Amino acid sequence: MQCVNCHFENMPGITTCGRCGASLQLASAVIDVHPPRASRMAKRWRHWFPLSRYWYRLRAANLLSRIPHLHLHWPSELPPVPVLLKMIVPGWAQWSLGRNARAKWMFGVYLGLVLSSILFLGTAIGWLLLGLAVAVHAASVMDVLGTDIFDVRQRLAYTCAAVAALTLLVYYPIGRLVATVASPQYFNMDAPPFYAGDVLLANPSAYWHSDPQPGDLVHYELPTLDVPIPGQHMVYRLRGDRIDRIIAKDGQTVTCSQGKLLVDGQPATWSPLGAVQFADSLNITVPANHYLIFPSTDRLRPDVQSAAILIHRDHIWGRVYWRSQPLWRFGPIH
Amino acid sequence: MARFEKLEFNTQQSDPSPAPERNEPDPLARDADYWMKKADDSRRMGLYENALKFYSRALELDRSLVAGWLGQVQMLVQLEEYPEAELWSRKSLELFPKNGELMAARAQAFCRMGDMKQAYALCDGALQQTGQSGYRWLVRGEIMVAAGKDVDRHCFDKAQQLEEDWLVPLEAARIDLFYQRPSKALIRIRRALDLAPDAPYVWFIQGTCQAQLGLRNAAQESFRYCLELSPRHADAEEQLRRLQKWSWSPIKMFRRLLGR
Image (cartoon, rainbow over all chains, first blue to last red; front, side, top):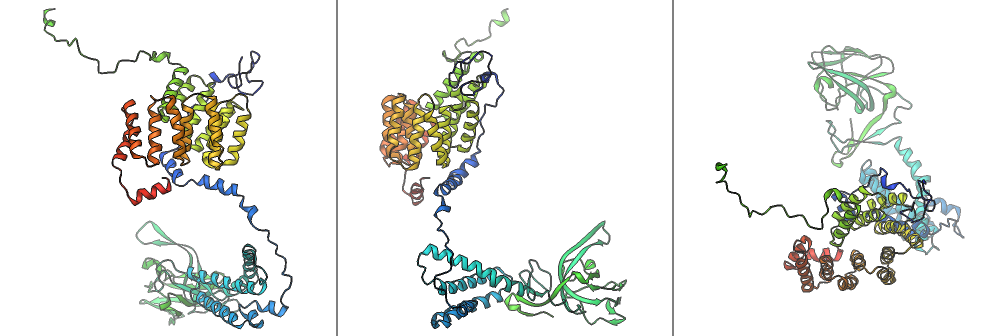
């Protein structure tokens, strides 16, 4: 039997060619002979965006081998240790080296960027400004350490290393520290008295050494709670984190008389943030380690808003004290 | 039978269905060779979609036709379905290992996708296999063109030496056209025209080259020749209409600059 592929004459009865390995029984084999086809849309897409061609071109360019070797050894002549320590503040090291004009510029730009980023904390603009501040800081470091580096690519590599070192040694610890006293909470929907785009600052460390008190505006986590909707075979499921005021603490009894809220029989000093219609049937004694809160900032039905919820101490994350965005409502929250 | 005497029968009525061609065999007797011939005819007319179908028909009857598998891959490449062509050539190579033509076809698919490393390897492998063919050298030439090397001319000439078929310079011209080299394509297509002046598709490709070079009158002439030889050539009609309505516009200029 002659192979159709290589024309080698095989012995009769053999199923595959002894020379090339092709099947000798292809003529009667059950094989799909219809090739796969590309849709018109796929062809058009490939024509306009030849991604595979770009990918292979990039791969052929062997970019990795073109990246310069990072000889990240210390520069031959390091500045003295006090100057190195002063690099923690942009411009300080330059000031000590006598480059006063440069020091002023660097510190001024850096300070402006940092203050602006604090003003816009919790927003995309804030992160952008902070990134620019880090870049200015890295530039100030390179200004001291990289005076004898003239190759652009090598300078770029050193700058990247400086940014990484600053992020790890300075900005990450500072960021963690700041987050313990000012954790931005962003509102992406209206929840009167807060509105979409509002940024509130919460202090997670406020209750590390003291307990929350009635009247405190807190950031808390709502346990999963199914509130039945009257007249319908439905429940409203509440969960997630919210911001509202503590009305009563453990041991206090909360009741309602003629639509007025009473705490231990006296009119309540504090009211929830939003407008709430209290039910006359309300009569709750707050158990130990719990706090009573009305989820009034949620866009709920009035009957659900009036549902008094007991929040465990551990589910209160921090005290909310400041509104940083929008700027025309910038200020403390009471 | 008197009542049937007044019935009028049009004895000279012509059959609306076209008369079967004398060369057309009985549908039951159409074998793989018949469909391969049809595929080849379609390919020479530039009807690559039809050619692909006919190659598949041929393979339905005889799966051991290497030329059928090869033709399918080549048609997929001509139809700009490169990933599919690569996949199909891989499958074909499983059935016919180390087949030089199939390796070359796969190399062409890789080359069109931009993977020059694989294309080089497969093309080298194809040329090392036993036997010689114009197609292997055509693919070699295409890889040279894609790589920007100026030795493609020798590869295309070698392909022409191995096969005295006008399809070889035609496909070389199509390769040049694909890589935006209409002036070189025009040289190739003229050689094809010397070999087959009665092939409408060759005139069509010549017209396309001339149109890309801005030779409007010459291109119109070529498309007219194409339509004389094949009056139903829709692409030629379209191109001719476009040339007759030709006008300058910044968008067209921009598209021309981009090669779209």
